[in-house]
Image 1 (cartoon, rainbow, N blue to C red):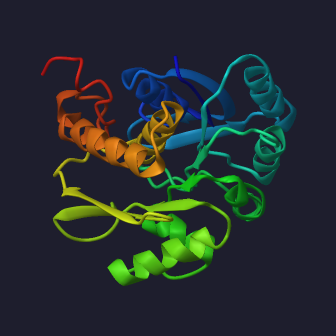
Image 2: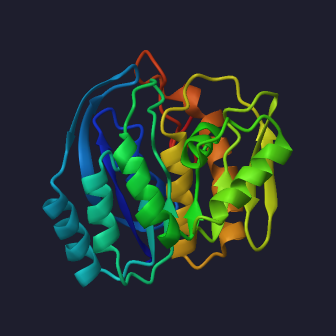
Length: 264
């Protein structure tokens, strides 16, 4: 049984964060372990409160998992503060498993999930450790202190600029771009483009968390990075197609992680 560890915040609404990651691992056939960095009070409409987990507890959770479980991939999501970011980086020193870093900054509701010192710590400590970095276009621009990429050429250039900061691969997610086709660009040793029709739905809560977790699941199962991204991209597309079946909440509902299992 392949094992993956998610290090992220908890979403009380169940659509993103740790909850989305564990659902993703499970449906793709991977055993999921977890380390919480923060607890959020949120639903499909808003994030109403955030409380961080102490750095000591973050380190202890990760150490406990790595000491006993044969972790084959790590996914990092919401960190929140510089102290939490430093704790994660310290705890993962010497970890040989591939790391998928999702630089979570803004919730689907528009609420900010990270502060400026945490972004600086992420750039300094975690980008050099990342096997795959998975920013959306605004997150990439914030990491680079640039304007948001406006076309494919700028997107590719920003992906390469981020790779120069440490990650082996960068998946530039195109969900914030305009157009009827959504294109994600994988920059790295084997550049690839992944395109799919844009789905007309507001139920896209947790897409970033879910995609990065699906990539980590593939890496845990021995897939190459392009293979893991290709499978994750196609699987997430189907989860978004099926999202309107769920009828969860009155805001941005979650994608349907179990679309292949639960009937229509």
